[in-house]
Image (cartoon, rainbow, N blue to C red; front, side, top):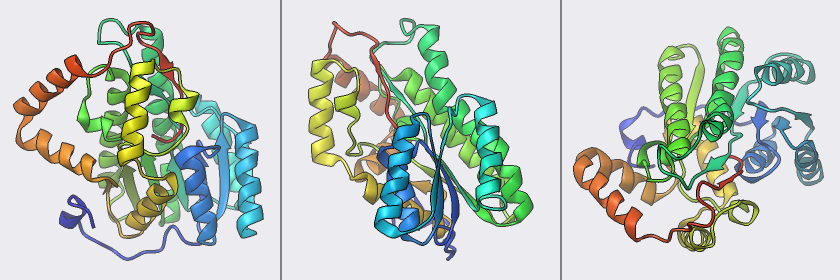
Length: 297
């Protein structure tokens, strides 16, 4: 049990077992790990992704590995109409509303300070990272509330409270997901629907290789991922177990706990330390503001 979880009530429930689950960003990374783990627990998964081929591959992995039924669908979570279509599709394949919704799809962006980012990047990233989760909660929450049982897992990030320099767009988007999750948890209290928000630091995915990141930042990210990164499978298992126990926050790594506590107890010192790190860590002026896409971080 984590530091934050120790002060929260623990309720035994097996929501993640035999679930009828919708997972966005299920084509790779943490999203694929969620889909596979739910199938391992006897669940049926609707795998949504903006890359339909990757979603199809997740379905094949589920069917080949676990023999469980699975489905795939194209969905751009930044588009409300796509998420509404996803909800209708879920009701058809599950013959009713889902019992578990995982709003996982997301993108990463970083490299420029506030004032140099540009509104196109703000709109692009917030459209997916924040509005994607807003769409998922706004559309699916009433269905689960009406059913009187189920769960919603929103994938945020430790960036939502860490406030690292050069990551303003990403930080704002993930902080918004945290606040939305906290509010939704209060609104759904007593309804039979649980809400969990995942806030990891580094997870071992192909994000660095696939992304457009400067060489200095790439080397640093590779090193941190190698030293502290968890596997997506471990993160998915931990999150689903925590959700079953009624926990709101999931901070899988100790470094996330450390940042959480340091910032809250010593806010001025924390901000000063971030400023020092920002001046000494590798910079790459050749690709300022370069952004990169990733799923479920």
